[in-house]
Image (tube, rainbow, N blue to C red; front, side):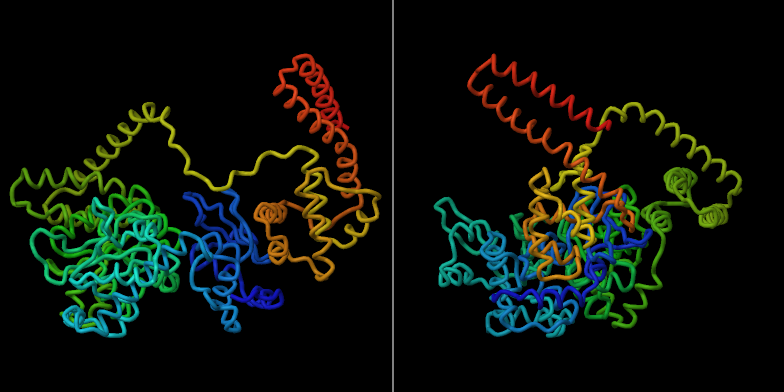
Length: 612
């Protein structure tokens, strides 16, 4: 890929609002002058991820990540800087010359991740070619057509076929693929002798793409279901594929989810694909397993509303009940259940009734989670007996106790009173007793739970450490230097001025070069100019400081006074601590004692400076 000139990069940047790009991945809401949402880089329940449209930067106040629009995509999708520029250009419809696009469709060049993704995507192309263009693929293509899928849909999802004849290993051998990478790809099964053979045979292949749209794994459906083999076979977990995190079709569905403000969770891949062909583009599915907290969090970052549309048979209803329980415990999503006729799955309903009826059903068949449970708990009950009725009412009371809206609760109580010919006041009394019992149980459990502290999620970046007086002054002055050319001119005239800490001095030096070619300071632009991640992050931290718009001479005088006063002491402390470490290494006890005394004296002097 040719190096993208700075003026082209700036054209892409100025044509893009970072909030529009971030909004594809994070549900942002206005708070003050900035936008906030759940951080896409770590799990959290209280939004601490901020986007400043006026500065065109993002920053998470919890994990510390920050940067401009290119940095956001680099961090989230693990792509290189040129690839991020191309992605942003495509998003903003900025034309780029072809030499800037070469090899720009994957993650960072030469990375292991890139090579593994390349294997998956080559395999997807081979499987798709076999399905569409070979005699071996004709039975699978006929099967998909019989399931009502068009050639356009098959192309969109790059569906394929893995034949009985093992072709994948010879295919990669002909391309001199690295043996170790093939072992780690999940595409093969390795025997005791180290021989690799194709994992998938005689299966219709569904590529599983990650949130960035790259193929990370496969799911293969047997063309002819036989005893002894699973109907669906997924790739094993690899460096690319974690089934608890990946959501099928999430990459393609995300724009429609944002547009409609809701997502529909289906049970299977075919349900999602069938719905998309019918014009329902906001459908996703989990990886053939129960919904996970990681998948819930990914959904929460994108929308507030989730519709659960599973099969109408008994296993599907049980799966809905499990999903609602998990969602109720681990999310703040507004939930609905789309109830299908008994025995049908969404794909069967569409094929039997047509696209328009399918779309209409998704809108009109919604019910609340409580309504679903009221009906679900009736299944296989003989409610004409008193014992069954009492047992049913005892089971639903804890559910009704969770209803917050008085009108909704009144509706359910009226229906129960009418159906079972009960006094509504008796039901209300039973409900209040249930609420008291639940509150008492929670109170009893509280002391036992108090000592147990859940470990926080692992953060890539640490929260900002407390700053001493000197660093606060350095940061304040550096901010003013970058944003005000008058301050820059004044500080530049101070003889032999320099910052005490190296990072601030490096940024100051780089800014000198930046201002030789740029008249106006833009933090989003400057972060690309300095390149180094640590320094980029420091610049973003500066932008999140609570600084007044106007700058005064007194403010700059105070910064300079602190820096000029504390700098000699800080330098001496650094030298003495280095000497102490060396004396400790050599076992020189007398020198250690003397150095400790000198360090204590310098620390006292530093404390005295703070009080001036």
